[in-house]
Length: 304
Image (cartoon, rainbow, N blue to C red; front, side, top):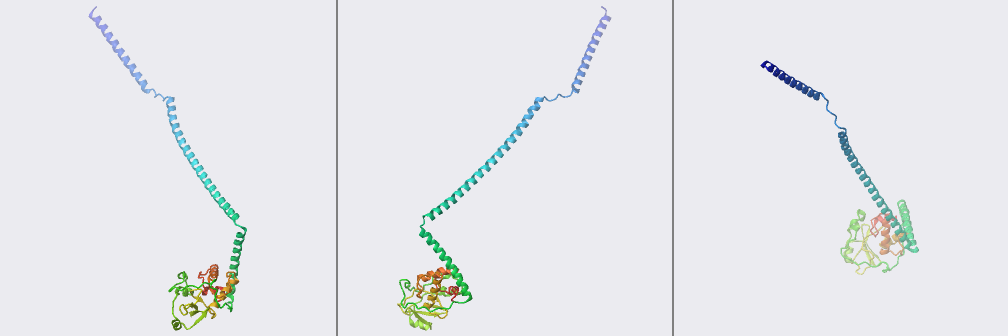
C-alpha cells in the first residue's frame, strides 16, 4: 500500500474521532442544559405530613396545659366553696348549741327563780318610769319638805356606826367632776375638841346625840366634839330648806320609798340600805354614783 493511501486512512480515522468527540460533547452539553432547565422536584408529601404532626403536637400540648389550668381553677373553686360550706355549717351548729344551752339553762331554772327575775325586771321598769315622772314634776314644781318623827335612838343593827380615820377621803370622789361635787372631793376627816369646833363654826346641831357643823350648804360630822358620838356616815350631807341632817335624810328616804328604791324604815339614818337605794337611783338617772345625799340627786328628786 502506498503512502498516499495510508495517509488518507489515517486522516479519516482522526476525523471520525474528532467528530465522535464533538458529538459526545454536544450531547453532554445538551443533557446538562436540560438538567438546569428542569424544575426542582416537589417535597414529598410525607415530609409535610411529618411537619404537621409536630405543629399539631404543639397545639395539643397548649390545649393540655390550658385544660390543666382550668381544672385546677375549678378544683380550687370547689375547695373554697366546700370550706365555706363547712364554716357555715360550723357556725349554724354553734348557734344551735348556744340556743340549746340557753333552752336547757332556762329549763333547769325553777319557776320561782324565773318569777323572781321577771318581778325584778318589772320593778326596775316601774322605778325608772316613776323616776321620770318625779323628775318631770320636780322641773315643774319643787316638792315641799316634810317633817318626820324619826326615832330618838338609832337602830345600829341596820345602820352600824362608822369608825373615825384621820384624813380619810371619800373613795371615788376624785372622779366626780363639777363644782357641785367639790365638797366631796375636798372632804377629809378631822378630829378636834369642842372649843376648836366652836371657834371655827358658829352653827352646830345634834342628831342622835352626835354634833354636825354647817359649812357652805352641807352638814359634816364634827369628829372629836363628843368623842363617843355615833355617825352612820362619814361625809357631807347636802342640806336644803334649812333642814337638819336627820330630816334631810328622812325626806330622801320617803321619796325613794315611794319610787320603789328604798324598802327600809324612814329613820333619818344614812346607813347601808339608804346608801344602796341612793346609788340605785343615781345609776338609773345617769348621775355620779356617790351613794350620798348631794345637790344633783336632791334636784333630781325635786327637793332642791
